[in-house]
Amino acid sequence: MTTILPSLVWLIASAVWAQAPATAEIGLTVRSLSGQTIHLAASDLAKLPRVHLNAVAHDGKAHEYEGVRLSDVLAKAGAPSGDLLRGKEMADFVVAEAADSYRVVFSLAELDPDFGNRQIIVADKMDGQPLPPQDGPLRLVVSGDKRQARWVRMLTTLTIARAP
Image 1 (cartoon, one colour):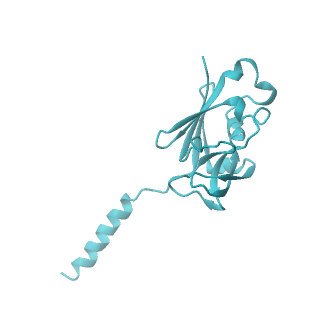
Image 2 (cartoon, rainbow, N blue to C red):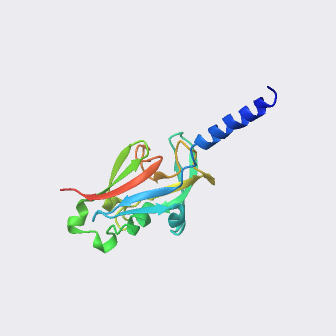
Image 3 (cartoon, rainbow, N blue to C red):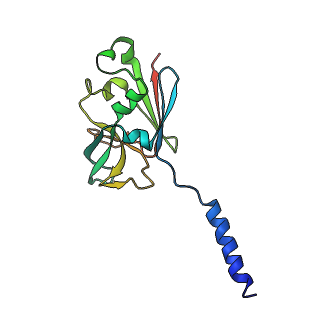
């Protein structure tokens, strides 16, 4: 019996480890206005300029977030910006979606640095550390909003669309 017990423990532990979920890879799916879908892996996001943003989070405390500008991510999907954002493009919008199906909407113009006067970033760090699992691995941080209802935690997908 004493020789069977270590084998049994090893067998059970192996089964548990084999079924343990793998760590979620950082990535973001972006659907363009033309219907093209691109996936930006952590390595793709790392190639974009990094920014820091100090903002007061849902917990009422100031934190330093680090990530990339949402406008830079949208540019990778061909979203119009600057002088190209006029006329019918003024009806374009972005739906940001979380892993738990939470969604928020932004007009494309408010995300463009030539129009809006706020920073909106896709953050992967808070106070120099990776985002906690309940917030990450990616999160939208919207400076200037009085409420954090558009701070999409567990961000997975951005969809660019046009209002009819």
